[in-house]
Image 1 (cartoon, each protein chain N blue to C red):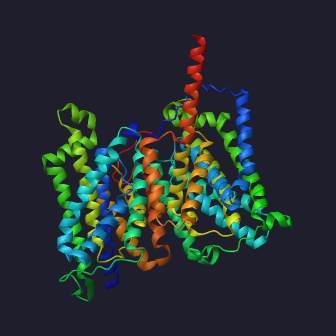
Image 2: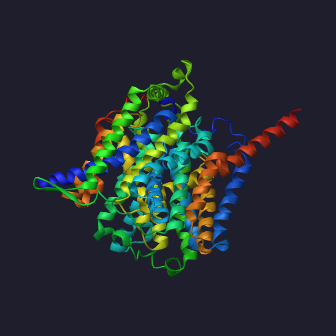
Image 3: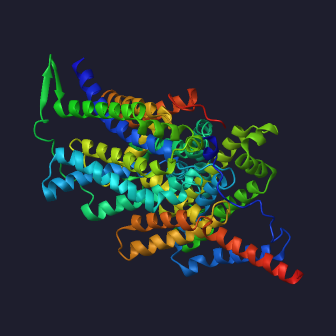
Length: 339
Length: 289
């Protein structure tokens, strides 16, 4: 029974990294990534580009738990949406520059994540997914109940985009994209730093062999809670920027379909790849934007269909598949040159 | 006092829907190790099919009560054969995600076909109205739904404990490897058990049809509460699913009656309390972490 419970997702991080950390390719790829980041609002409608970055960071926060700690949170909408509301309320009430409001929202997400994480890590695997899902739904009902604060079904409207009186950022979504992207990049950098730190190594150990990690003296539950709270903070960062970008926060942000969508993006991008989240977000957000602008009604058919297909046939996701193909290619080349 | 009895009855009737569905969820989980996210969608399908049978073929409630579980059984068998079986050997999270994707498809498909407003369904003739016991007015249909689900849960319980099939299923739940070693073809039971679990969800849907608004979204909240039910009862436990189902139904009904603002939240507080005190659920076995 317990064997099937432990959430070991089949990521092959154990393979030695063929593209070594010092390799110039790494920097080239990073540069290419930054170039795409800068050019994105030239290619697509800037608010959609902003959505891609927000969902990308959101998916990265889920991957931090799923891919690197072995916990599938199916309730991350609570932190994304909780932060969206909190960010909006801070921005409306005090009119502070939006990054301050977003950081406030992110801190709020971490505050609600702590008790939820504390309770949820008592269960593992599939139970963890169910428990987080249920707690997120509880947050949804609470938000719906606090109508005076959240606007209930109507959502929180008229969130201002205050930014030190700089008119271009406040009113032009093209320039706002760059201001928001800075926050998202900081979030991604934090995620990267966490994964590649000694702390991140312990998380991987907790994922692969919790009993052994415990035997080595690590308090498994405490590490899980910390990872959960950090992940919620990143989800909150993304949700806050999302709320500012759209100028409103709705109950939809807290609904379990949102939790599901971000898991879809994570799996599509590739579990345990971190960067895959951005790729997955690019695909899902542009696809949804295309479908809704072309007047197609059944978006759920498409997203659900993608879900079924990737889970059945494409479990490494886009980034994972590309990485494996690259590894195989490099290995073959090496073998060929050696012979 | 009379109000309290009414709420209790409503709670037990709603609890019956939860118990039947959670029973299906528990049986599927026990034998296949799959947490079926689409269980709420199957409950919704049961109600929608009942409404469509009535509207297009004018087949009433009693026919639906027999026909819908049969249809849903077939649907479950198809689902298991076409999709679920390919992921059984992998981490259960994959089937959780697969059935989640399936939920999105089913809900959207029903929404496209039948719209977002509810389908009409009336309380069947002979079960309408109220009955007065002493000074208390009780809805006849609520009594029927309550008794029906209790009887059904007992029947499934007897099936599980008194028959050879039940014995095999329980053994397969307990230890599939050893059951196989004793010469029982566990694989043969996987598909029918899955279909049976889905049929129970569909049946709960038919039972709920006369009392709830039949919409594509009716399963969306249901599935979350169902998860809370099985977490409270202990996912591996069939008895736990039934007891927790009725318990949650009662808690919800009292919540709606005495603290309407917090009715939905109370269930999750109950779940949190159970996790805090007994992480494996009221009737669950201890997990080896």
